[in-house]
Image (cartoon, rainbow, N blue to C red; front, side, top):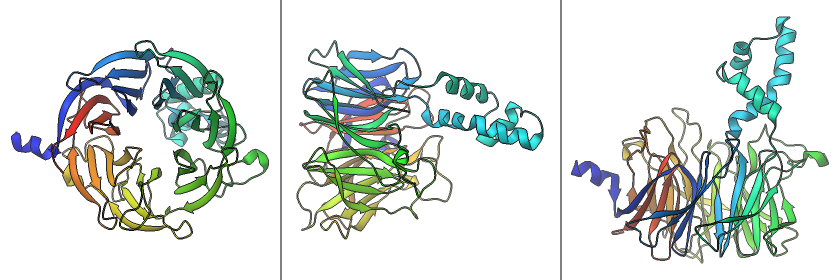
Length: 426
């Protein structure tokens, strides 16, 4: 038993734990952790972590229905921003095809199709066709983001619910001045960047937009890809730059020195042949081995046996006209006892701050991996922690991570669980 536990952790130990509902994002500020939950009715939890051995929930925002989830969260001072996105959007998106699909099947069969015949075309269960019909008839107009006053941590107060369009907003960035929202907008295909001024947090004002050529279909642009595969996942601000992950189109770097006119200054796409989408991209502060480097992580999605798992990249971005992959880091399936259990195994996300060449990356069933990229040609794992599955789940699903000013690490599972960790060695 001791050997098994040792295999689950190296140079990291658990300090505190809460069996919180599954989380999509965690951020820590001034002794409080803010956690956006994956599934309704749970919205956002504020957890007092000033005593890391005994974390306690200070406030929990609950959702009024199960049509939305608010699984992403950011804080800056006394402001908190949460996304509002259609719950189960990937599944419900299939319902958009129903009218056209029924018309085609009716023409082919000479009669209206049965639910089982429709379901076979959509790749769903026959009983789910009625659910898709109901969702399509109901529509969805809640997507967007909310701004909260969190000066009283026990009583977060909603200031505004800014609606955008379509399925709403996904991951995003914010600071004291602006919210950098990844969202669907009318007339565009897939998520784009919309920047809002937070000068009056109760009335955020749009200041600019950015999209990839081909997304603005209302203006006559034509995508060169199928469906939603190329879109903004989210963009992170670093000085006068924004580092944008754009899913199956790799990443872009934007110049936002004029916040009203974001412009693309670098582009790099490694799809294909690599099958998993780009989730996050950030440069490491300063230079590393005389180079400016950036770290990107792909997200493990629906893995197909024999295909590469999602992993982490190190790029030389010294010259934006000649971005070069220097190395990659991967985790073997042998490194987790749950690698082939139901659930995802592979990379997902890293702490969205690279103030040193140390990357804290979540790896779903592979837990948390701490990776030293000070030699950009040879990333080296210095620590890992794999939590045990909770709530009768078949595998851990480590989803997001943050680190506070004391070096404590905050890890959430997308199904159940919140761990506070500390480093014991490197």
